Length: 97
Image (cartoon, rainbow, N blue to C red):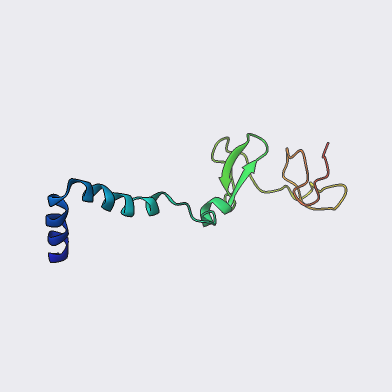
């Protein structure tokens, strides 16, 4: 606490010193991390309404439709389970009817 008081006293003697201190302190606050947050990595876009939902969600937060692939809906090319309403297979990219 004493160090803060001493810094404040010395900064008050020179008007430009406070600006310099701010320039040194503020830039790290605006730097973005090189990796996206874990939460952002776990979001998926629901093809039926284009809403972004958490990957673990069972129902869409926007339209209420189930997010899990139906058991009988499979990609004709690779056999991957595909969500109802999807236009492309998320596994192989095959265009779906």
